[in-house]
Length: 359
Image 1 (cartoon, rainbow, N blue to C red):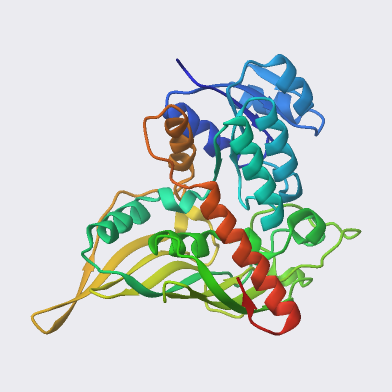
Image 2 (image 1 turned 180 degrees about the vertical axis):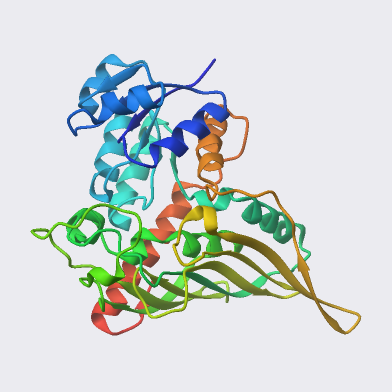
């Protein structure tokens, strides 16, 4: 039976969700958006039969099996819960929720309804990440001792005064927006249980229009800007592993860097996306490397994979459909997402208190 999909939110990420669902053989039949005309426009642009101005109307009238949620962060949890209670599987954009407490409620509803809950941690679906995960699973690089996660931008604020910079709507700033490399590092580490978190966030440059990025939403002079521009932290795990992180929208670095680097008991590795100055996906260079010792000599190896300009977004959406249909293992689990959100909560708590936070 063909899985029928609906999408809540007609923004820019719709194109990747639509492509992924269709790549997996699903039928995309409905789109809903509260903004006047947005759903109708998206339905024509992406050849989606049904357009709705409310989620309630779509749930009532459309025969969808699953729904993807592409809306501001504040609405992830309530919409996911509403859809699961209506009998639909849910694929939700990142971050999973505003907090670990919200996500825990989402997980309880998923269990109670028996509906699958997954998130768009799309960097796990990048070819480089899939290949590195295979190498780690094979034992060739041993066990990861330590890792460094980085998504650092020099000029990347996605709209000053819009919902991205409003803590009530977004839950936080750069950290909660660009959580992907923290997630990917822990994915490579088999998602160990965190022990302690010490971190500091910075709001330097957060209201400076000179640090805006080439994407996002328009500035809103009447809006709220009360989130961080950068976060730095260190996490220890009960397994003995460690992870350091640097995440920023606006920080004094040479160029945008997106990477996970790790050191294992038999070898090390790096997955990196290095952007040109404009920060646009099409100008980025992806690399996948491993570092080993052979016959007493240092050997660096490049792992060649196919190019993927969409950073795994299409593959991530396709995996959701395949997981629903039992054709593939899900690339992420709600339990992993909960661990990630607990760490994000702890980073903000540590920054506010100036003290380490035990988990």
